[in-house]
Length: 306
Image (cartoon, rainbow, N blue to C red; front, side, top):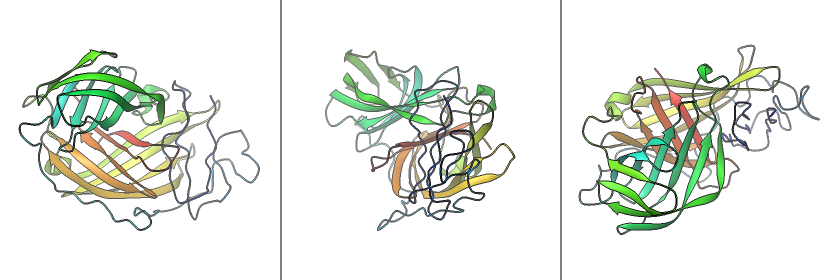
Protein backbone atom coordinates (compact mmCIF):
# COMPACT_ATOMS: atom_id res chain seq x y z
CA UNK A 1 0.00 0.00 0.00
CA UNK A 2 1.48 3.37 -1.00
CA UNK A 3 1.71 6.45 1.18
CA UNK A 4 -1.36 8.61 0.77
CA UNK A 5 -1.03 12.23 -0.14
CA UNK A 6 -0.71 14.90 2.53
CA UNK A 7 -3.37 17.50 1.78
CA UNK A 8 -3.12 21.10 2.97
CA UNK A 9 -6.75 22.15 3.08
CA UNK A 10 -7.63 23.48 6.56
CA UNK A 11 -6.07 24.06 9.97
CA UNK A 12 -6.20 20.42 10.98
CA UNK A 13 -3.64 17.68 11.39
CA UNK A 14 -5.27 14.33 10.79
CA UNK A 15 -3.39 11.48 12.33
CA UNK A 16 -5.22 8.26 11.56
CA UNK A 17 -5.16 7.75 7.81
CA UNK A 18 -7.57 5.40 6.04
CA UNK A 19 -5.56 2.22 6.45
CA UNK A 20 -6.29 -1.47 6.38
CA UNK A 21 -3.37 -2.28 8.64
CA UNK A 22 -0.20 -4.16 7.83
CA UNK A 23 3.41 -3.13 7.45
CA UNK A 24 2.97 -0.99 4.32
CA UNK A 25 1.01 1.40 6.49
CA UNK A 26 -0.41 4.72 5.40
CA UNK A 27 0.87 7.78 7.23
CA UNK A 28 -1.34 10.24 9.05
CA UNK A 29 -2.69 12.55 6.38
CA UNK A 30 -1.65 16.06 7.33
CA UNK A 31 -3.52 19.31 6.74
CA UNK A 32 -1.98 22.69 7.51
CA UNK A 33 -3.17 26.25 7.49
CA UNK A 34 -0.27 28.31 6.24
CA UNK A 35 1.26 25.25 4.61
CA UNK A 36 1.33 24.44 0.92
CA UNK A 37 -2.35 24.68 -0.03
CA UNK A 38 -3.12 21.89 -2.45
CA UNK A 39 0.29 20.35 -1.84
CA UNK A 40 1.01 16.78 -0.93
CA UNK A 41 3.72 14.64 0.50
CA UNK A 42 4.64 11.18 -0.66
CA UNK A 43 1.59 9.51 -2.18
CA UNK A 44 2.16 8.88 -5.84
CA UNK A 45 5.82 9.14 -6.80
CA UNK A 46 6.43 12.63 -8.08
CA UNK A 47 3.45 14.05 -6.25
CA UNK A 48 0.05 14.91 -7.68
CA UNK A 49 -1.14 17.92 -9.59
CA UNK A 50 -0.56 21.02 -7.53
CA UNK A 51 1.64 19.11 -5.10
CA UNK A 52 5.27 18.46 -4.47
CA UNK A 53 6.94 15.26 -3.31
CA UNK A 54 8.21 15.78 0.20
CA UNK A 55 5.73 18.56 0.92
CA UNK A 56 6.70 22.18 1.50
CA UNK A 57 9.63 22.50 3.86
CA UNK A 58 8.57 23.66 7.26
CA UNK A 59 4.87 23.09 6.77
CA UNK A 60 2.76 24.90 9.34
CA UNK A 61 5.22 25.64 12.12
CA UNK A 62 3.64 25.62 15.52
CA UNK A 63 0.04 25.42 14.47
CA UNK A 64 -2.85 26.48 16.66
CA UNK A 65 -3.77 24.32 19.62
CA UNK A 66 -7.05 26.07 20.44
CA UNK A 67 -10.14 25.20 18.40
CA UNK A 68 -12.19 28.19 17.17
CA UNK A 69 -14.27 29.50 20.04
CA UNK A 70 -12.68 27.00 22.41
CA UNK A 71 -10.14 26.98 25.20
CA UNK A 72 -7.23 24.77 26.16
CA UNK A 73 -8.27 21.92 28.50
CA UNK A 74 -6.78 22.10 31.97
CA UNK A 75 -5.67 19.38 34.36
CA UNK A 76 -6.66 18.61 37.92
CA UNK A 77 -9.91 16.85 38.66
CA UNK A 78 -10.61 14.01 41.05
CA UNK A 79 -9.32 10.44 41.52
CA UNK A 80 -11.51 7.39 40.84
CA UNK A 81 -14.67 7.55 42.92
CA UNK A 82 -15.00 4.71 45.44
CA UNK A 83 -17.91 2.31 45.13
CA UNK A 84 -18.22 2.86 41.37
CA UNK A 85 -16.88 1.18 38.24
CA UNK A 86 -14.30 3.96 37.86
CA UNK A 87 -10.68 2.84 37.87
CA UNK A 88 -8.08 0.87 35.93
CA UNK A 89 -8.61 -2.67 34.64
CA UNK A 90 -6.10 -5.06 33.08
CA UNK A 91 -6.95 -7.90 30.72
CA UNK A 92 -8.43 -8.78 27.35
CA UNK A 93 -11.18 -6.62 25.83
CA UNK A 94 -11.28 -8.73 22.69
CA UNK A 95 -7.94 -7.50 21.28
CA UNK A 96 -5.39 -9.10 23.57
CA UNK A 97 -3.87 -8.05 26.89
CA UNK A 98 -4.27 -4.34 27.56
CA UNK A 99 -4.99 -1.55 30.02
CA UNK A 100 -8.47 -0.04 30.20
CA UNK A 101 -9.64 2.90 32.26
CA UNK A 102 -13.18 3.84 33.28
CA UNK A 103 -13.58 7.48 34.29
CA UNK A 104 -15.91 8.88 36.91
CA UNK A 105 -18.32 9.70 34.09
CA UNK A 106 -18.20 6.02 32.96
CA UNK A 107 -16.15 6.93 29.87
CA UNK A 108 -13.94 4.08 28.69
CA UNK A 109 -10.40 4.46 27.32
CA UNK A 110 -8.03 1.59 26.63
CA UNK A 111 -5.32 0.09 24.48
CA UNK A 112 -3.85 -3.37 23.93
CA UNK A 113 -0.30 -3.79 22.59
CA UNK A 114 0.53 -6.74 20.33
CA UNK A 115 3.83 -8.58 20.13
CA UNK A 116 4.22 -7.48 16.50
CA UNK A 117 4.27 -3.80 17.52
CA UNK A 118 0.73 -2.97 16.48
CA UNK A 119 -2.02 -1.93 18.89
CA UNK A 120 -5.79 -1.73 19.25
CA UNK A 121 -7.61 1.00 21.16
CA UNK A 122 -11.17 1.16 22.46
CA UNK A 123 -13.37 4.08 23.50
CA UNK A 124 -16.97 4.61 24.57
CA UNK A 125 -19.14 4.97 27.64
CA UNK A 126 -20.26 2.07 29.82
CA UNK A 127 -23.18 3.99 31.31
CA UNK A 128 -24.79 3.48 34.68
CA UNK A 129 -25.50 0.12 36.24
CA UNK A 130 -23.76 -3.22 36.46
CA UNK A 131 -24.31 -4.33 32.87
CA UNK A 132 -23.58 -2.88 29.45
CA UNK A 133 -25.04 -3.95 26.13
CA UNK A 134 -24.01 -1.80 23.20
CA UNK A 135 -21.30 -0.73 20.78
CA UNK A 136 -17.85 0.65 21.58
CA UNK A 137 -15.53 2.49 19.19
CA UNK A 138 -12.45 0.52 18.18
CA UNK A 139 -9.32 1.68 16.34
CA UNK A 140 -6.35 -0.23 14.96
CA UNK A 141 -2.82 1.17 15.12
CA UNK A 142 -0.18 -0.05 12.70
CA UNK A 143 3.28 -1.06 13.82
CA UNK A 144 6.27 0.82 12.48
CA UNK A 145 7.77 -0.51 9.26
CA UNK A 146 9.88 -2.36 10.29
CA UNK A 147 8.62 -2.76 13.88
CA UNK A 148 12.11 -2.09 15.26
CA UNK A 149 12.02 1.43 13.76
CA UNK A 150 9.56 2.82 16.30
CA UNK A 151 6.25 2.36 18.05
CA UNK A 152 2.68 2.08 16.82
CA UNK A 153 1.01 5.13 15.40
CA UNK A 154 -1.25 5.33 12.36
CA UNK A 155 -4.83 4.54 13.31
CA UNK A 156 -7.83 3.33 11.40
CA UNK A 157 -11.43 3.08 12.55
CA UNK A 158 -12.79 -0.42 12.98
CA UNK A 159 -16.13 -0.16 11.22
CA UNK A 160 -18.79 -0.98 12.19
CA UNK A 161 -18.28 -0.50 15.95
CA UNK A 162 -18.24 -3.81 17.79
CA UNK A 163 -21.13 -4.68 20.10
CA UNK A 164 -20.42 -5.95 23.62
CA UNK A 165 -22.60 -7.53 26.30
CA UNK A 166 -20.84 -7.06 29.64
CA UNK A 167 -21.23 -7.67 33.35
CA UNK A 168 -19.36 -5.18 35.56
CA UNK A 169 -18.39 -5.66 39.17
CA UNK A 170 -17.39 -2.22 40.39
CA UNK A 171 -13.62 -1.87 40.57
CA UNK A 172 -13.11 -5.62 40.41
CA UNK A 173 -13.95 -7.10 37.04
CA UNK A 174 -15.52 -6.65 33.61
CA UNK A 175 -16.61 -9.88 31.93
CA UNK A 176 -18.52 -10.74 28.77
CA UNK A 177 -22.00 -12.21 29.05
CA UNK A 178 -22.07 -12.96 25.32
CA UNK A 179 -20.41 -11.75 22.15
CA UNK A 180 -16.68 -10.98 22.04
CA UNK A 181 -14.73 -12.59 24.88
CA UNK A 182 -13.86 -10.00 27.53
CA UNK A 183 -12.05 -10.68 30.79
CA UNK A 184 -10.66 -7.79 32.83
CA UNK A 185 -9.74 -7.48 36.49
CA UNK A 186 -9.21 -4.36 38.53
CA UNK A 187 -5.56 -3.33 38.69
CA UNK A 188 -3.96 -3.82 42.07
CA UNK A 189 -1.26 -1.67 43.63
CA UNK A 190 2.06 -2.15 41.87
CA UNK A 191 0.73 -3.86 38.74
CA UNK A 192 1.37 -0.71 36.72
CA UNK A 193 4.05 1.88 37.28
CA UNK A 194 2.24 5.06 38.28
CA UNK A 195 1.77 7.61 35.50
CA UNK A 196 0.98 10.97 37.10
CA UNK A 197 2.07 14.60 36.96
CA UNK A 198 5.20 13.84 38.98
CA UNK A 199 6.39 10.73 37.12
CA UNK A 200 5.57 12.14 33.69
CA UNK A 201 7.27 15.51 34.20
CA UNK A 202 9.71 16.37 31.44
CA UNK A 203 10.08 15.59 27.77
CA UNK A 204 8.95 12.55 25.77
CA UNK A 205 9.19 11.60 22.09
CA UNK A 206 7.82 8.79 19.92
CA UNK A 207 8.15 7.89 16.23
CA UNK A 208 6.06 5.74 13.92
CA UNK A 209 7.85 4.86 10.68
CA UNK A 210 5.86 4.31 7.49
CA UNK A 211 7.17 3.55 4.03
CA UNK A 212 6.21 3.44 0.38
CA UNK A 213 8.04 1.34 -2.19
CA UNK A 214 11.18 3.47 -2.10
CA UNK A 215 11.30 5.76 0.95
CA UNK A 216 10.43 5.83 4.64
CA UNK A 217 9.07 8.70 6.72
CA UNK A 218 8.43 9.10 10.44
CA UNK A 219 5.44 10.58 12.20
CA UNK A 220 6.82 12.12 15.39
CA UNK A 221 4.99 13.04 18.60
CA UNK A 222 6.85 15.23 21.09
CA UNK A 223 5.32 15.76 24.54
CA UNK A 224 6.29 18.00 27.45
CA UNK A 225 4.62 17.59 30.85
CA UNK A 226 4.89 20.36 33.46
CA UNK A 227 2.63 19.99 36.47
CA UNK A 228 -0.82 19.24 35.07
CA UNK A 229 -0.08 20.96 31.76
CA UNK A 230 0.73 18.99 28.62
CA UNK A 231 2.16 20.60 25.50
CA UNK A 232 3.80 19.26 22.41
CA UNK A 233 3.81 18.98 18.67
CA UNK A 234 3.46 16.49 15.87
CA UNK A 235 5.57 16.49 12.73
CA UNK A 236 6.72 14.41 9.79
CA UNK A 237 10.43 13.55 9.48
CA UNK A 238 11.42 13.17 5.83
CA UNK A 239 14.06 10.73 4.52
CA UNK A 240 16.61 13.58 4.36
CA UNK A 241 16.01 14.39 8.04
CA UNK A 242 14.05 17.58 7.42
CA UNK A 243 10.95 18.20 9.51
CA UNK A 244 7.64 19.24 7.94
CA UNK A 245 3.98 19.59 8.89
CA UNK A 246 4.71 20.81 12.42
CA UNK A 247 1.57 21.32 14.50
CA UNK A 248 1.10 21.99 18.20
CA UNK A 249 -1.16 20.42 20.81
CA UNK A 250 -1.91 21.65 24.33
CA UNK A 251 -4.05 20.57 27.25
CA UNK A 252 -3.97 19.07 30.71
CA UNK A 253 -3.77 15.83 32.65
CA UNK A 254 -5.57 14.50 35.70
CA UNK A 255 -3.92 12.08 38.12
CA UNK A 256 -6.27 9.10 38.17
CA UNK A 257 -4.81 6.40 40.36
CA UNK A 258 -2.02 4.65 38.45
CA UNK A 259 -2.82 6.34 35.11
CA UNK A 260 -3.35 9.88 33.87
CA UNK A 261 -6.47 11.09 32.11
CA UNK A 262 -5.58 13.54 29.34
CA UNK A 263 -7.53 16.15 27.41
CA UNK A 264 -5.90 18.31 24.77
CA UNK A 265 -6.55 20.38 21.67
CA UNK A 266 -4.89 19.41 18.44
CA UNK A 267 -5.81 22.23 16.08
CA UNK A 268 -9.54 22.05 15.32
CA UNK A 269 -10.54 19.22 17.69
CA UNK A 270 -10.36 18.26 21.36
CA UNK A 271 -9.02 14.79 22.13
CA UNK A 272 -9.65 12.84 25.35
CA UNK A 273 -7.78 9.77 26.46
CA UNK A 274 -5.15 8.32 28.77
CA UNK A 275 -1.43 8.09 29.37
CA UNK A 276 -0.06 5.00 31.10
CA UNK A 277 2.99 2.80 31.48
CA UNK A 278 2.23 -0.62 29.98
CA UNK A 279 3.28 -3.76 31.79
CA UNK A 280 6.79 -4.82 30.78
CA UNK A 281 7.02 -1.61 28.77
CA UNK A 282 10.63 -0.77 29.67
CA UNK A 283 9.63 2.70 30.83
CA UNK A 284 7.83 3.61 27.62
CA UNK A 285 4.61 5.62 27.83
CA UNK A 286 1.37 5.01 25.95
CA UNK A 287 -0.19 8.33 24.92
CA UNK A 288 -3.56 8.11 23.20
CA UNK A 289 -6.54 10.36 22.67
CA UNK A 290 -9.74 10.20 20.62
CA UNK A 291 -11.99 12.92 19.30
CA UNK A 292 -15.68 12.71 18.47
CA UNK A 293 -15.33 15.88 16.40
CA UNK A 294 -15.83 16.11 12.67
CA UNK A 295 -12.69 14.61 11.16
CA UNK A 296 -11.88 11.60 9.05
CA UNK A 297 -9.22 10.63 11.56
CA UNK A 298 -10.23 10.09 15.13
CA UNK A 299 -7.14 9.26 17.15
CA UNK A 300 -3.69 10.50 18.01
CA UNK A 301 -1.51 7.80 19.52
CA UNK A 302 2.14 7.09 20.20
CA UNK A 303 4.51 4.98 22.25
CA UNK A 304 6.85 7.51 23.84
CA UNK A 305 10.27 7.32 25.45
CA UNK A 306 12.49 9.81 27.27
